[in-house]
Image 1 (cartoon, rainbow, N blue to C red):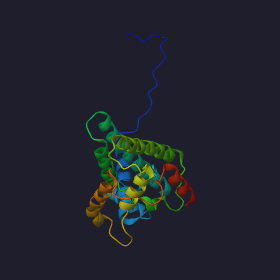
Image 2 (image 1 turned 135 degrees about the vertical axis):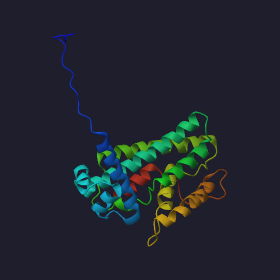
Image 3 (image 1 turned 60 degrees about the vertical axis):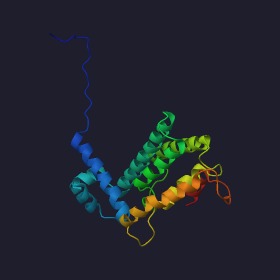
Length: 224
């Protein structure tokens, strides 16, 4: 059967090989782990070794350290956003109580080690990169949605804002100076649970000041 002369040929767009995508993901995972354990200046060849790839593969994917740091931060932000959206979807489907969904998100975010990754944001890191800005907006919207649902259910105390939640998760998942990051894991969820118990309504005390908003966090970030 001959092809129709008027039919334009189908242009096949090359797709990245599956093994190349897996290598990239392994590099990002290894970098995330080692940034948490040893800080953002960990040697790149050590990251390649943990990822099980050669140095050439790492540099082909991430020519500069800043490229890898950026990818790690965007990846963690995206994964944390997914957790918030999944928790909200469970509430909307009637599968979870709004406060329990918030609790689930907080513990899941801790497992992403978002607080321990804060040091990689120092230095020359571009906090306003369009990709990171877009992911940060997605995260803020998703967490705001969770907080709104918990407020609407009457389970979350009214004087707590989304900024309070994000600040607390960041601080409580950041290891103390001079301590071993991995040894802190056994305390993180314990302390988060204490924090979450303090968020439930009715409030047991009056909080000083006002609730932290997302705008407050953006202003503080811009000053730093």
